[in-house]
Image (tube, rainbow, N blue to C red; front, side, top):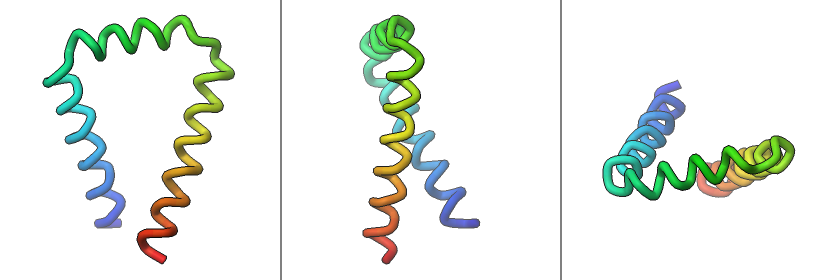
Length: 61
């Protein structure tokens, strides 16, 4: 559980840093994402999740 909370905290650090360092670019990215079809966003999220699980498996295995 401690590892999961640490991972979530790191996600917040990385995402927060992106918004702090590149606010205009992040806003543009969000506006661009609003124009994408839901299926593309869903597939991209699923691909990212699968890739993340695979990387955790490689690192921890």
